[in-house]
Length: 263
Ligand code: ATP
Image 1 (cartoon, rainbow, N blue to C red):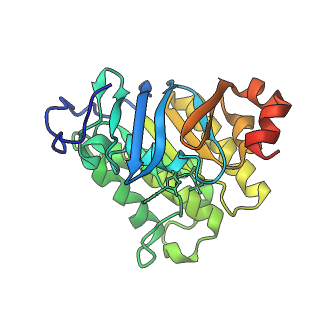
Image 2 (image 1 turned 180 degrees about the horizontal axis):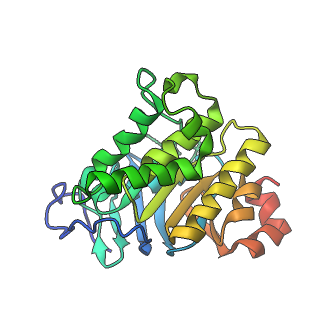
């Protein structure tokens, strides 16, 4: 465990541009401890997310799920511990540097710029991606997102504020994909959506992972749905990992479900 509090943002992390192969990289969270003042939000959390897999992070309100994603993506500085993207240490790097290294964070809340059109919002995702790709590659990438989410293709010229909740969720995921990430961090994509829409979006995420070999860390309170598409899962409670296993085993554990998963 290394104290990181005094490490200047972005210094000495050795992160280089890993430019968009579109393939996932392994993410190793090691003994991560994050505090907000006296509140210990993460207490020596360790987990691994593998390429080509969906790793679910489950737990009740306040378990530390959002803090985990915010710490991985550099928005919050941990007190101690590490986050390895492949062989590279991310702790200490600036959020923008971590994004450029291949980690795309889709926060809770589906933030879009409502004054802009759907395609303009999508293209914002390119800003954090690689700069080495040409216009043709970018067009192809946009088309890939439209293939994944035909509802966005139909609405590409419409203002973002005309979208439904599900379409907005597709938009923020699509925007993240335009940065050509190796790791996709999804915070509660199902929140407030109808079960049918959740099933549709989760099905698309599963296809995407199978097709592109991305690494996905999926934070969800909707444990039942998350485990139905995940490969493995970690259950957090009060900042600690209380269970981890393959998704089917977690979903079959009645005691765990009743105690922590709410189904
Ligand atoms: P939820 O689903 O409600 O967002 P969560 O599992 O994502 O829950 P976190 O949001 O990571 O949990 O919160 C973990 C703990 O840290 C909670 O006790 C919460 O009150 C606290 N916390 C989160 N953000 C802050 C903050 N900015 N300042 C102080 N405490 C915070």
